[in-house]
Image (cartoon, rainbow, N blue to C red):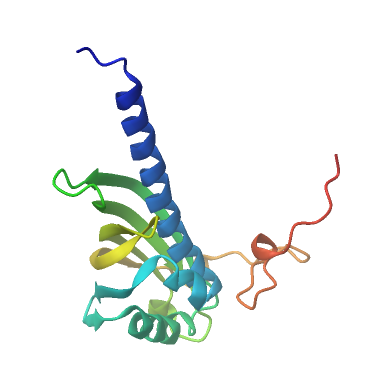
Length: 181
């Protein structure tokens, strides 16, 4: 019997939706780190996930504690993810892996110039689908390069510029205002 194409269409749609859910988990993690929102960071992972980042290997709660020590010394952080490739396990449709290239800007006014970093990395993640949610079950962060950004070459932000915050007042996390339509 010939397929009418509906099964293929449904499978393709499921794959696209799963990829989108996986990408959104990755973005929640980045925003959570940049805004120092521990709940948002945790929402990208299963509660029992294992994470390996440099010399650190541990749980998500332990990861948050380590990251907060590092990120707390920075005036801000800004993560960029690029080139995310998601592959689904052919033997288990509830399992996928992703490789995401990224870089992060991590300036600090409290440290010598070598503390103002730009680093390139890759996230190698294993995702599992549990109760309808794709979340990270295992993560390995691969460090690729580091660059020092000398503050002497930086320009100050203009007076009155809108800037980001980590205290829950950032514009990106404010409640929706009334529609202007």
